[in-house]
Image (cartoon, rainbow, N blue to C red; front, top):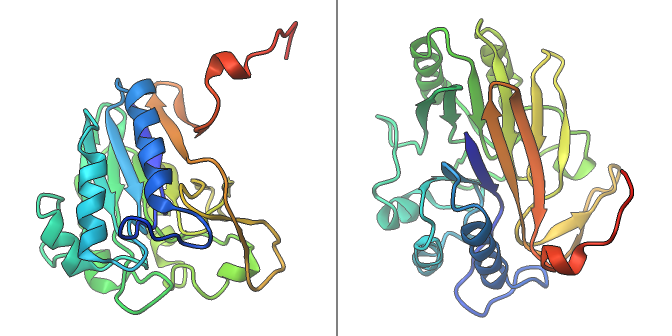
Length: 266
């Protein structure tokens, strides 16, 4: 199974920059590249912060930009989003019985879980008892299937000072519940931190983040405030198959023929 991950697109109404970057231009280039190079993908997942202020106009713009994608799209919410405004523009995106934008998909390689950690007015993530009840049911219903988890806020320790107070405020509850799933967790995929990060939790669960398609920051694990910077539009290509889970970063820039140089070995 081939999955494309975009994250932290931070769309604004046309012509408005965010931290020196035009998020509309970034996303249009990324989507164009995805359609051209990965038309055989099974799913596109955008892991939150779809829009910078949750403007209805920005969600309408997102719908227009995503229209050429020829395969299924699953949209998730981050702290910058606004659930009612999102639902008004994307009513067909699945929600649970409490209205949270979370769902599951069963595949030949296990169950995919999409968790909603957005809470209005909170920069960090919330995953309270009502959402946890949905996760319990989704894991129980998975039976013998392993799960792969998508969420906006990292449910793991990231070690970056800027995010120490704005991660997932759950005291590790999501990780504990996932670790109790006997068939296993293949991977946790998240956004929010705008930079690539990968590792293994204390519970032995592998995780990684995608790099923001919009602005990202120059990494300094001790800095309380980030130095925002630009960069080429980017996304990740994820594979789930009999070999397990793999993730490849993709940056939109020069064509492969322009980049290619003779090479005798690695």
